[in-house]
Image (cartoon, rainbow, N blue to C red; front, side):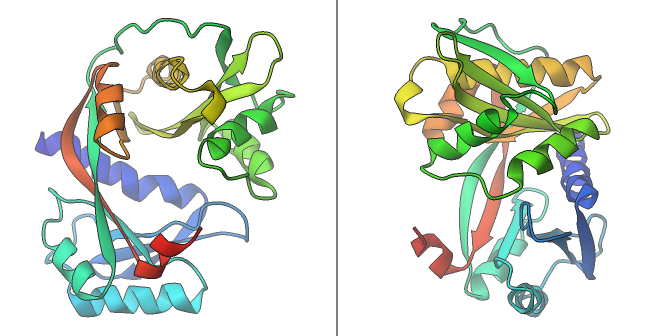
Length: 258
């Protein structure tokens, strides 16, 4: 399992570099997005750096994040960087643990969702913006300006695959998600279903479609992070199994934001 986690760590370090610059803080690397739009990213352990991060290292990164007006956020795998949680929490951040799950082999079969069609969405697809918006709606949010165009660009560059479940009658995107393949590894991210369309198997069907597309592209290792134990059990139905713990740390006030 160490080899699998090392591959995931290398992936975590590689993925942001397509749309962010990496700032070196010794044992930590802070990824800063290029431009005003898109994901604001986070800091992570620097792969292969000897020694662990101290509270002082964490505070230097936090100062830089504040300077740029970006979230004070860190992400890492507990099992590969076991000492980081203590340093992060000692700096005043709050860490949250999430199951890190890996799929070995092909996904288990899931029923087709009734009244819906699940498919991948291309960069020029007229339903792309709707497909991008569906996971946001799952959490009561809306995409930011330029999000659909940014996703279209990533699809064109081969950095992202977008799949969605569309209502068979009206055509609205009811669920969506993405997979990001890099060097034989891919992470399934952002899967969400509109509240009114839940409990129809759309999330699992979208995930299965994303995995199938990743396999078509030669990806051998597919993984994801479950938000909680209920979601962990859901993905286990596809064949994903928990292999480690993903930790996400943020400032306490970030938890209070609406």
